[in-house]
Amino acid sequence: MRTVLIGSAFVLGGCAIERGSWTAFDERPRVDAVIDGWHDAAARGDFAGYFGRMTPDAVFLGTDATERWERAAFEEFARPYFDGVEAWTYRPRDRHLMFSGDGRTGWFDEMLDHERYGELRGTGVVRIGSDGAWRIAHYSLTFTVPNEVAPRVVEVIRPMLGD
Image (tube, rainbow, N blue to C red; front, side, top):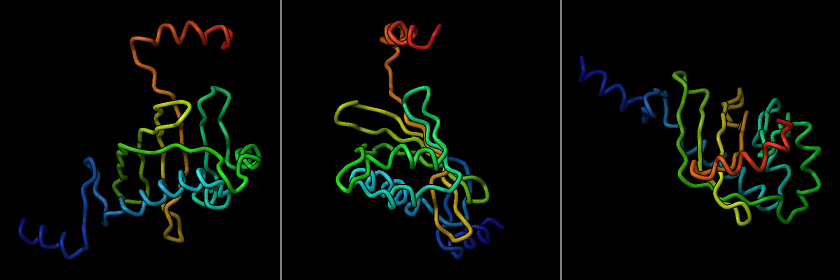
């Protein structure tokens, strides 16, 4: 029985186990290309390329506590930054990607480098649409704060939060 199952996996064309979740096909290269293309589109100021990689109901969470952007509002906010030169540039690295059991949803986390802000973390959800294309449905951008300095950071931001 094991031989049949292993043989079947190869016949299916690259079945993959991704962090404990089974996917029918290894979609990792396609998803990586979408996320990398999304970051690249922002770095080039390509509005259509950036927002075209997001689902119509996508949500973007920025680093500020007030930044919960549904796609339409995010487009309106971001449009002036996309002038064909550069909106913002985050260089992704160390991405971890997992898939749901049916292979139609993925979630990821990645470290990002930014010239001004240094190291950040992004987390997101991707979904495959009825057209077979992967798109970003949710993304959250956060600053990484070392535990040793967290109390000082909280001390600085607490008055701004109304605590």
